[in-house]
Amino acid sequence: MKLGEVIQKERERKKISLEDAATKIGLSADDYRSLEAGETPAETWGPLLANIAIQLETPTSRLLAESGKSADCKPGQAAKLIAGHRERRNKTIEQMAEKLEISADEYRRIEAGESEIEVWGPRLLNFAEVVELPVFNFFYPFGLPLDKLTVEDYR
Image (tube, rainbow, N blue to C red; front, side, top):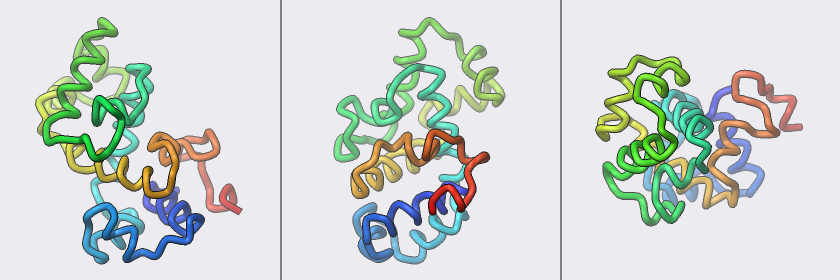
C-alpha cells in the first residue's frame, strides 16, 4: 500500500473533502490528488523520516519542530533537529546511513537541509494534525509498515 492511499483513507475517515484537505496543508487540489495517488516525493521521504525517528528513538513530529507542531516548522529546521538527536544518541552519520540503507552522502544531505524531508515532513505533520493522528501512524497504520499493509486492513 502507498502512503497516499493511507492519507486518502484517513481523510475519508474524518469526512474531510479533498479540497478542504488540500487547502489545510497548503497544496492545490491537483497537487493534493497527486499526493493521494502516491505520485509525490512523500512516498520516499515520509517513510524515510519515520525510519529516522525509529533509529533516533524520537517522535517523528519532534524531528520537524521542537514543539512537535506543524505551525512551528521552519525551513532547514528538520535538518538541525535530526542532527541534534543523532549527536545526542552518539550515532555517526555512517551508522545512521547504514541503518537507513542509504549512502552516507545521502544522509549528509538530510542533515544539511537539502532533502525533501524539509518540504514533505511539515506537510505530513500538518495533515496529521488535520486528521488528529500522530504523523508516525501514516507509515505504520495498524502497527504494520506500509509495504505489509493492504487495502483489506482498512475495512
